Every structure is written in C-alpha cells, then in structure tokens.
Image (cartoon, rainbow, N blue to C red; front, side):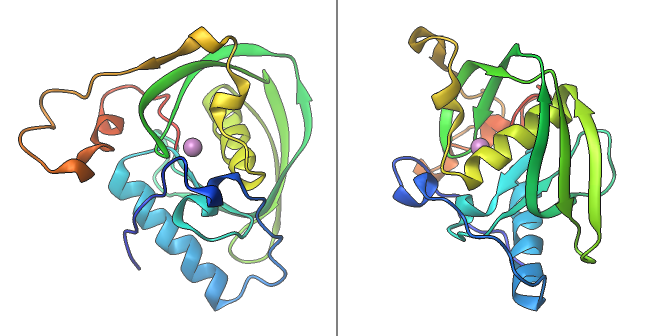
Amino acid sequence: MANLPILEIPNPILRKRAKRVRSIDKKMLRIAYDMVDTLNAAGGIGLAANQIGQLWRIIVLQMPEEESSRIYFNPEIIKTEGTREVEEGCLSIPNYRGLVTRSVSIKFQGKDYSDNIVTFKAENLLSQAVEHEVDHLNGILYTDHLVAHSELYRVEEPDISHTNEDSSNNNDYLNSSSTIELK
Ligand code: NI
C-alpha cells in the first residue's frame, strides 16, 4: 500500500472519464487500498481514482464519524432530490474553496470490495462527498458547479501546519478543523 501523489489541475487526467471496473480483482483492490492510504495521509473525506492517475471508476470515502474507509467500485447516483448550496474544496485544486450547488439527498449504488452491491440513501456530508467523487470519475470538478464565478475563493493555509516546507506542502490546509473538506 502506498501514499501516492495527488494530481492537480490542470492535469488532463482530471478531465477524463474513468472506465467501469469489470472485475474487482487484485489490481483494482490494490488501487483502492492505495487510494485509502493516500486519502488518509491527506486527512480528507474522499478521493477518486483519477486523482492518482488511474482512470477506473473507484472512489474512497472517509467520513469523519466512521472508523473505516468506504471503498466503492462503479459508484452510481441513481436518484437525486432537491438542491442546496454548500462550500467545497478539492485536493486537486489546492488552496481554493467555492460555493457550489449540490443535491439535498441522493440514492447511491455501487459495489464494495467483496463484489457485493451496496445501495443507500444519503444526505448532508455523505451525499455531498459522493456527488463530488462521482463527478471526478466523469472528469467534472467542483468548480464546474459554482453558484457564481465570484464564489471561488483562495484560502490561507493554516499557520500551524506550515513552517518552512517546500512547494509540495499545499495539501496541508485540508487537515484543518473543517469537516467539509472534500478531495
Ligand atoms: Ni476533489
């Protein structure tokens, strides 16, 4: 397992559509577990395979209140309800946050690491995270959903986690206290 570099804009892989996973085999599981390691090292809530340069339909989520990471293959949003405005960030767009339109709730279907079909209805942060990560698999970034062009803002990195690191330090702000950080 490995903590891998996370691709950032304007890397073209972030704008590509990921392929369906045909068989949840060792190769796919390896990618998923690497994604979990990468996500947890970044202290984030979600990561899509595109972000580590793998164009497969895999997402991982680490909800703040949950002990284990969720791994989903071929995730699909099969129904959405309502709209709301929420603030969002993404590890592939470091140091920015924006106000975006998301669904109030979603119905989700995907497969877990044991090849079992998983379905659930989600709202709040889980719904937002799933929409954000499934978007990644379709080459869509949260900046495509901005409420208005003016609703994208640069955020300062927290003082505490930054002393004199090199230029690879730009993901650390996502370790700050907010629980709505998405990757
Ligand atoms: Ni993201």
